[in-house]
Image (cartoon, rainbow, N blue to C red; front, side, top):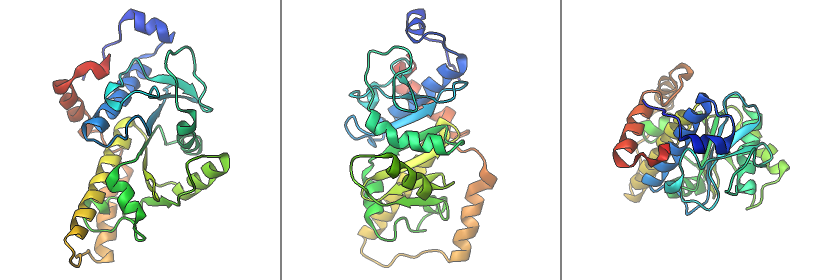
Length: 258
């Protein structure tokens, strides 16, 4: 898979740029484009953030006001843990929106990428008292591995962040009640594939419930066994799927790499 460097003029705008950072920029821009392609975006709101390799405390995030289908490797903004721009950028960032991500990045060494969406299916399931049911194989990936956080309003304070990360614990995914979905991945690919799996599980549940009949759920012992099988010893998810997803984007529009 090609991770060709950007034109020299664009590199100069960032200052020194490592190969690892450029690869992360391409992966993160791809995650934004794929999110838009699947209609999981919400106007210009929500974020996907990623750590900058080799630069502790620095992160990449979308330029605020851009649609997810407009994000590319070179217009991602580098910021610190407080949302301050690192270096120069002609684009603003949503500091308030990043605060939630910052709390997770700071609390979890394995949270290289944090993805938060206002996906319709995820919000709808988060509103249900029982949350995500073990109703499908996609849902069973999260059986025992899904956190919940009660809605606390639009603003996000340090105290809110402390409660959110306490609720998240060491789990890879969360349903934010009345609000949306969140995943934390050791790579951009892992955060994205976890999100795709969670959203599909929510969609399946809603469609099954729409039938108005009793749902057949697996026995608890079966659900637990399947969850451990799908956890696969903690293997990094997305390694197989990600190259195929990048090839799909390349066939549609390669401008995310710019």
